[in-house]
Length: 367
Image (cartoon, rainbow, N blue to C red; front, side, top):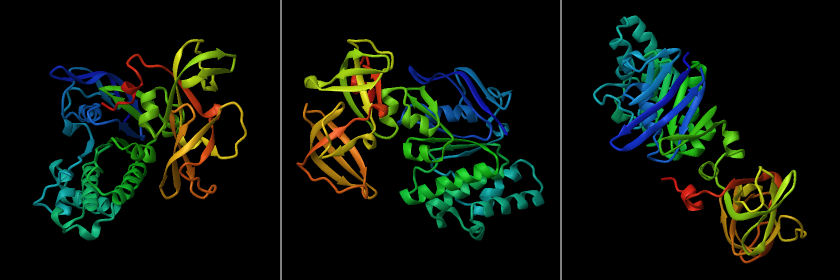
């Protein structure tokens, strides 16, 4: 099965660089996600790999084969579109067996393949149904079955679950990953939904403005973001601005608004550097009776949101900055709006970033 590699890939539409000198390797049998906000270039990159559009420069390899000049139908790919793109006048059976027939398979082969893939997606009992008679989830499974029936070694998914309701989308995404793994396919899954990408991917490439910002496993991107944008886009983070006022071999002391001091791990910053401190909401420890100490800040609970398994607290700190803390619902007694609390920022869970040239808001923008 194929490794996919793109080298110095660029694609412009007019003056807009949809893909800007991208180099990326997707391993054999890997389920890989291209993740980013709308307009970041992830669909363009997928279509370049598929051969649906041509790059302005750069190289695309599937396996060890340069495929820049090879048409889509000869790249051994299965492409599943957001709109399903099923033939409305054909039954599920005819949609699925269309690929093998077009490729010249004999009727016995096409029939065998059709039965196998429809069984795989659990739709064999609906093989005589037309797309208009199927639910959104069923249509999506037919679209995947059609891609698999064509003998695809590489499965490309372009926002393929975007039109499904939340519950069906969650069910289908695990089924698609399972099928790709069972068949030992290489899968590339384009999505703007970070929870979807985190749940099913072996690795993820986070994209922004035509470039790849960071590649890593879901755990790496969540716990070790390399930029403010990734820390903001993957999950949720608190951001506090400050200056490095003292450093040691292991830690730095950061002065926040109104002279509030917090400690963080030393990431090779110098005294006087302006920085941004980042903390995940679930890493903050919030209790009314915490003792005073380093990284223990006073605050007032402003808003509480019950979210089922977790409770979300919006807390106004004594220096007038706000943070979000998330606690498991069953972990402790719920706090109350207006309650005075202490907020502890564990040093080991804080990350420090250089202050961006364009300001913090520019880095938090998904545009």
